[in-house]
Amino acid sequence: MSDPCLAESIETTEIDYMELDRIIEEDFNNDKENLIMMLQEIQRRYNYLPTPALTYLSTSIGVPLSQIYGVATFYSTFSLEPRGRNIISICLGTACHVRGGERIREKLEESLNIEDGETTEDLRFTLESVRCIGCCSLGPVVKINEDTHGRIAYTEVDKILEKYE
Ligand code: FES
Image (spheres, protein in one colour):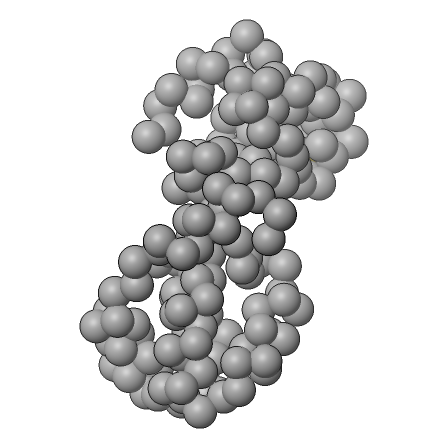
């Protein structure tokens, strides 16, 4: 882990083990066949897969931790590093690119003081570039969580960010 801020966040992430038990036992019957869905649920709860939660899961369902890491690293939707409460997807697909997507990404990086793929120190935002999110006519497009912001100008970026805590 190269970023000390992120490393610290991992150490201090508080795991709700009762909730973890509920996910493992009640939602998924303690059945290791449901491993991927359990990981999805844990990631939904924490926005990433905290190491203590994976260790607990490993013991609970009897699957070696190395195997759980294998699954978690195979699928790009899983993250082993803390992610922001708000996930920003900046589209750099062709249609958005020709309409100024790069300029929007630069503005996002400047405003958040992070680079593409990074998370702010306060864990408020994670910035990720993507290739086409299926609404090309609205380009340039930025998606924040489930909200799609289309035809945005770089001068609007800060105002949009303000809406997310
Ligand atoms: S290229 Fe950006 S939404 Fe398709």
